[in-house]
Image (cartoon, rainbow, N blue to C red):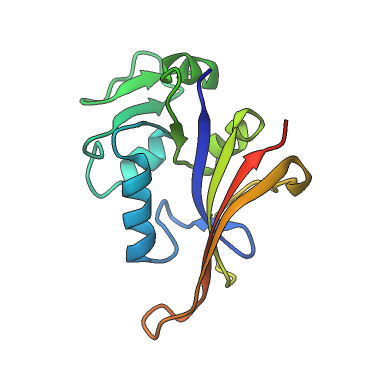
Length: 164
């Protein structure tokens, strides 16, 4: 089996990005992302790859999905469809889907686990996360974090596993 996990930070109005950028800066969330994904395969669309501060992200195997035949990116493996991305995933180890919006939507039916950071505030955005049918998921972990003066909003880490 190729375990597929989605990792995403979502505003309470499902916003996830604007102008190919994150909507907030939560240092603890970035540390959590690094801790979870380091040593694993990460799968993303080309625009998400282009938005990364360091490309490719160190100590991770990067699979980039593009619809441009023959396109290559140094240090990355290319996939030209969702199906090809799945074929490139590792057996028996978590594979993380890291964005963007269309990639998340296409992988939702295939995902076994969701690592959500829910930001308890609405944000203006041009990219939104697909609706989640929570009846298909069981919450297995939650940590609620109260607002700090610098952030100005509360957020929660919630992990879900798909019900069989």
